[in-house]
Image 1 (cartoon, rainbow, N blue to C red):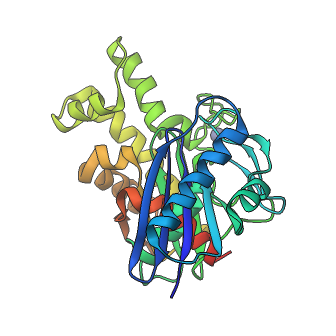
Image 2 (image 1 turned 120 degrees about the vertical axis):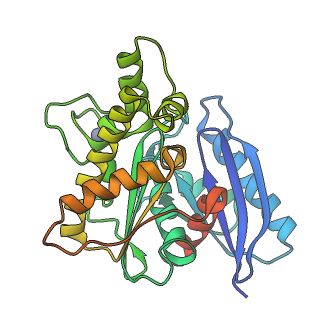
Amino acid sequence: MRATLGLDLGGTKIAAGVLTDDGLKGYFERPTPQTGDGDAVARAIAEAGREAVRQSGLAVAVAGVGTPGPLDFAEGVVRFAPNIPGLVDYPLRERLEDWLGMRVILENDANAAALAEHHFGAAQGAKHSLYVTVSTGIGGGVIINGRVHRGAYGQGGEVGHLTVVPGGPLCGCGRQGCLEAVASGRALERDASYAYGEPLSAEALFVRFHDGEAKAVSLVEGAARHIGVALASLQKVLDPEVIVLGGGVVLGGGEDFVAAIRRAYEEHLRGWKAAPIRTARLGRSVGVIGAALAAEYC
Ligand SMILES: [Zn+2]
C-alpha cells in the first residue's frame, strides 16, 4: 500500500499527513517557529512528520516537502522562503533526512499544489494542466504528462513574475510590472487603499466588489483582466488541457472574479483553442497531498 509523508511548510503553520490509496492518514498541524532559526523550523517540520507517521500507524520510507520560494533542487537547499525567517541557503533536505530517517524530496509549494490538483483535484484526468494560485502573491505550476515542469534553472511555472506592465509597480522579486505586482491580493490592497484613501484589506474590497460598488468593481476587474491576458499567453505556449485557479483571492472573488478572468482569457484567445478554467477543489489539504505526490513523481 502507498504510504508517502507529505509536509507542507507555510508562513504560519506546518502541516503533515501520510498519503495512502485511501486518502490522507494521520493529518497533523503545528505553528511555524518564528524565531529566525532555520534549525528550529526544520526540527518543527520533522516533529510534525513523525507525529503524522505515528498517527497513521504505517511504515513510511519517503517524504516530500512543499516550501515557499525558490529552491536549489539538485542540492536540496532552500534559497530563501518569503515570510519564514531563518531559511536562507538552508540545507533542508539533508537536515530532514537526518532527523526523519527517510529519503526527502523538496518541491516548491505552488508546484506541489499543481500536482495535487492535477492528480486528485480539478484537473484530474487531464494529461497537461496549468495551476495558478492568487493569494497574497501569485504562484503557479506547470504539469506536463503528470509531472512538474521545473525547467532548466528551477524557475519553470513562475507565473506570478510574467511581466505584464513593463515599467509598472515594483514586485517583491525586485523587477517591475510582474503579474503579482498588479493582480495579487497585496497589489489589490495597495490599489484599493490608494483609491479609497484609507487602508483596505482584500477581503473588504471583495465585499464592496460583490455589492457592485463602481470603484471596487473596476479594481477587481482590472486585476482579473491582467490574469486573463497572462493565461491567454500561457495557453499559446504551454497549451494545457485544463487551467486550475486556486488561492485566497480566487475564493474571495468567487465566481464573478473567475468569470472576469475567463472573459479576458477568451477575448485574447479568439481564433485559438481555449481550455476550461476551473477553480481548485482540494482546499486546505492541497499542500500536504501535493508534497507527498512531489516525492512520488520526482
Ligand atoms: Zn516579480
